[in-house]
Length: 212
Ligand code: 2DT
Image: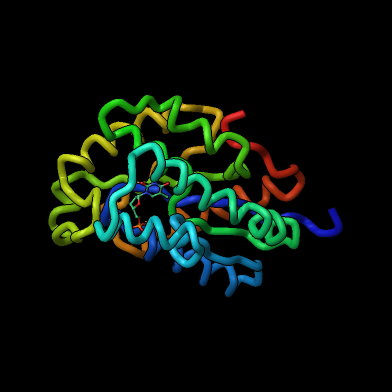
């Protein structure tokens, strides 16, 4: 590698935990400190596949459950060449949701094993760090109502939370659980500290493969 590679850092968490706010804050702070950083988000609703997913999430169309799971995965795979290019150029990527949301949400539906759900995402670029923003349902409720998209109900989100807990138990992934009930600034400081550490550690290692 001509230059040190960037790190792949993912933020996951339940609804209203502050993922998007924290992704933006982190990218801004890294850029200010002179480290190239960019944000990405999954699903990326701008691509052709992303538009199918968007229409499904807004309940404007129905898709069979296996099919939509594979579309979410394909939406990550179609961006892998761009992700690798950026990482190899030395840009750290901060990603709002990744394959972990894919597995947690689909396996919360009846009849889906976590193993089946993980398969299509096997071999994706492996995150150097996955930050899970943990928020209990009572605090989440104080932050406002659920939105109107598919999956935005408290009963479904409770099952999703349990699936995330199973994923976090997998020590092949570098998970860090963050208490998202703290102030935005406190959460940001925690996230920044862990991210800089992961970036320094990732520099000298090739990009890994997820779940292989
Ligand atoms: P946002 O509100 O963050 O745009 O999420 N989802 C997400 C899945 O079901 N599978 C996936 O692979 C991903 C990345 C989580 C939109 C919703 O899409 C769900 C919430």
